[in-house]
Image 1 (tube, rainbow, N blue to C red):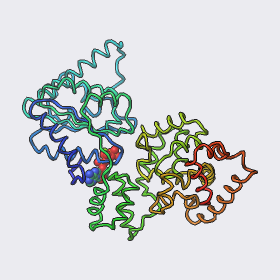
Image 2 (cartoon, helix red, strand yellow; image 1 turned 180 degrees about the vertical axis):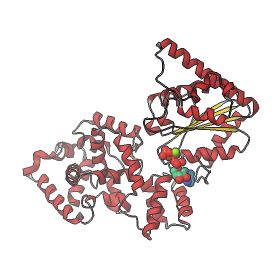
Image 3 (cartoon, rainbow, N blue to C red; image 1 turned 60 degrees about the horizontal axis):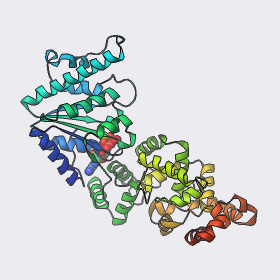
Image 4 (cartoon, rainbow, N blue to C red; image 1 turned 180 degrees about the horizontal axis):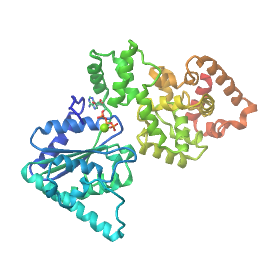
Length: 433
Ligand SMILES: Nc1ncnc2c1ncn2[C@@H]1O[C@H](COP(=O)(O)OP(=O)(O)OP(=O)(O)O)[C@@H](O)[C@H]1O
Ligand SMILES: [Mg+2]
């Protein structure tokens, strides 16, 4: 939340959020929550909003801390500290500024609830008193890491300050939001940030590189990053460092870290399904997944896809796809060589490789989605052709009589006769081998 950089492609979102804050300035308290995945631009948006608000409001900031160690109400302690109110004026809210010198005294649940309510009221009174002098803008970032009492206080203030010139402005990663956070956010006006458009990515890339990029490079950047400004920035850095516009096969380390963190939150079954889907392409063919990865259990595959959707790894309901290609690349990169071959084999046998929408992109050979979609190119560099021919050999065995029982049901005849489109895809996949 430092200085406000120029925001690209966010003009309408910024205008909408600014008008909400204007309403608060004129006395109608507002509660606005900005959400989106890591790197999408939430902190940048908060900074832009604060900068647009100018010097009129008193800005009080609070940050949340990831992991253990932060005391309860830590973001609110920062807000009160920033208020500059003397301790004598804080009343019961002064408790937030005292560091506990020893273990808290045991209290009954009723007494604890009562004390909490009095604390909430005291904080509301403090903010109300400040707002009598000038509008107040409370800015809380990274709320996905806030402790529950802090979230409850936020929810309380959202109601208690509705008639005061106070704006409560929060930001959180929707992909890491707890049920409590979702509940509180449901009380606020919400602004969900999505990826930049292809033009937006082109503009951002031009600004970062200091020169316009060839259109096909912009298109690949957009495809790989899903319009996530942080990913775009890191990819551009890598391109500039290597001195050519040819998209490097590797993923920037900072990006890998972000992606892995997200994937680590998923269940093993979900990751397994995604590994399978990743081989096939950015678009996800639910039918093929159900037949192949989830062994004929379509509802199970759908549930696992829903889990991936909640985590922001997959987007779209009727036509699910990876939110950006970097996810696919990270998943494939994370597979051991053995696992990669096993997934390749089962995906290839089920007709997922080179099939359907993803297959069209794969066969076009454009960018990482195209190249990664072919079994051989999913192998580590330097081993591609060898592995490809080995994979081809083993798939031929699967296609022959001897391996018949190993193949997915629809390859054994049932599905191919009933579903001509799928039969064509399977034949195409086998021909491609
Ligand atoms: N619309 C934009 N135009 C230009 N740069 C942007 C834009 N949005 C974000 N950025 C830049 O992208 C990077 C990531 O943005 P930011 O830190 O705001 O993401 P975030 O959503 O807060 O991520 P996190 O959840 O990890 O905190 C920053 O360098 C930021 O300046
Ligand atoms: Mg941030």
